[in-house]
Image (tube, rainbow, N blue to C red):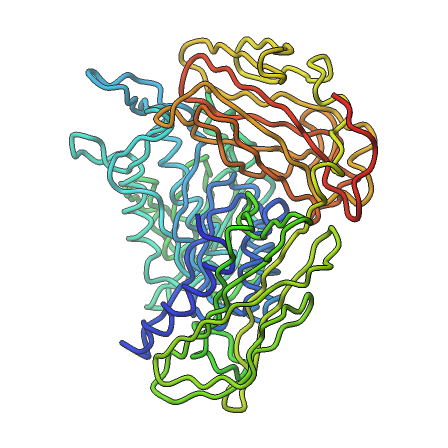
Length: 574
């Protein structure tokens, strides 16, 4: 539940502690587990706090389709470059797939399900493909999730390269073969072996070469259905030939090897969907050169890293649902925040803290800090801040050196009386059904809210996200919108996922920005969805809903209000 500024301050202190214990130990950032940087600004907001000064290796999680790996890694590289760490080493500390779909077989005496033999083979295909692809994109290490068996999504999703009886799944054998063939090898680049064939050339420590190759399948090219998944029915056999003057060893997915010999100076081979390895062949030209894995080491810009700032807001503020900004009512009186200045060094420090943007009152003059001392100061935001987005960028100079920044975004909202209801949002006719179950939408007079009832068929992926259309987008100057939600469930039945989807288009078309909201556990709960980070005018619809645990769910929505820069606009409408 931590905010971007809390995460940054804690990570800085942790880095300094690790390095105090062992200056040579490599430190990685807390792994980012976001689907897309295009729809989630949390990593960028954290790194704006100069956090690239406080880790040596950048690590992320990837559970997307194989076809999207190049764009995903490129996005993360661009983000690192924006923060002065373009060549930092990259690790993928969690990597997996949902391509096999929901586990197909029942586990006696348990609500958990297990993979069928066909589903196990999807994973066996995925593991070496994902590892080799990520290596080709510059990832220095990739950690497949996960070795032991485990279930998620109410037992319907099974992970693990080991079965519950301790036996090895095909993915384990495929991973062992990959390790045996390529663990010590250096990546040289990608040869061109023809349409539909992926090939990756490696050099072994003894100077010999190993060619990893496969034929593209649905796993490489599509986004599989999350329930039914894909099944390795077709082998996608494609033949190719390479120049060769001597015999080579061909090893299949599971480590079975055979000697293959050339004819007329060429070695004829067949690629299938399952990766194979050719060792001992002649030099093969590469079409795409290798991508470097980057360097270990934090960004160095001369900062005094030992002085760390943190901020604690008063109860007048609320935290935005994306944990990257503070919300403040225009009518708030005190507007207090506590500024903490810590010296994580064995030296005395003397300096000043400065703030850019909305400068608060109460900033101290010169600050004296003994070794490992922290001091706290009470600040007040200016009383005249208009409705809108503001930023406080804290920094300073201690012992003649700059310290790292702390960025505190604040959105000031207009009073409720000046905040208009979104026209039509209280009319059940304006909401479109969108669910994997049977859904009804009606006005509930007692709750003064739109009521949504859904009943799901058995053994289905449960989701409900009713749609509200915005033909002209949100009005210009929209900072965000708030809504009240109530569900009938208790805390123990809280949905796995609660999302607002902001869609730049109609239906399933267009870019969708997914924002988590704080769910209700039987009470009315208000949420604020910030739009200032997006282009509000491009949003043509939004969905508010959940992935519930139960087969039947009821929830209510009311008071969907627009928060505009300056004063509120049109008169309220139901």
